[in-house]
Image (cartoon, rainbow, N blue to C red):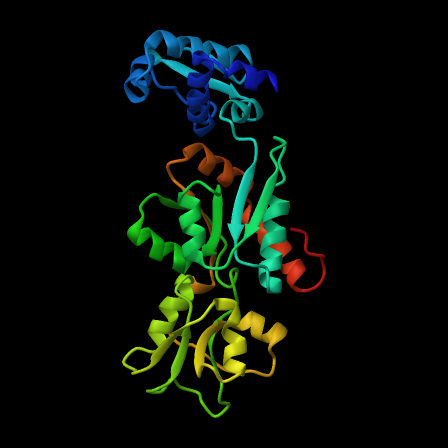
Length: 308
């Protein structure tokens, strides 16, 4: 057990843990809250707060300077020690299954970009369906999730506790969504068609409803990774799908582009729980958009081996 872990195994240490989370969010040079303000927000007695603050100072997690009537200011903070106090020992994210070079590049970019000087390991889990990824994020199973901006905006309508941490721009999540058809003669959704839909995928569901608007079709619930095979076998007549995977693995299948749709479905974003403020601050610091995109490009074009 580290020295910091031993220190937080008491009342003052537990309060120091909460204060550490606050200091992670403060910038060096900023004025810190007064004991009265902290006592009001934490429901902790002033004396306990003073002892907890002394503990952070004695371990050199923070350096403070009193400026009389102006208040007390954060002069220096040691993020590595503060993160130990805050019990942030690892980061785990969740993203789509890396079935395309686009996603392999994103996974490699995130893992590489998030290597850090604090010694905090970063791992990724893989799961289809943005709805499931967001749900498990909010349950605390994961620290961050990679989804499309379309899925993020949809989720924000029902859950204000989600925060977009990073936006990677157009074509970062995928190149395009298209409509795949079982019959090579079809270019349009027609009445009577059996249309595949995966309700775990926010993007696929929303786009399916968009392309079938005002059409009398029969929706067939299909697991996302089974859609293309069911189209090829004629079990469903049409479905919305990711063009990247078609080009890489299903070159013979017939598809047409979806016109006039919001490009948010092609934008990758990292989301987190805004209530975990210290994690949001850390993620914003660690994830550099240009680094992730550069590595994604190298992997997608075969100039770098995927690593995730």
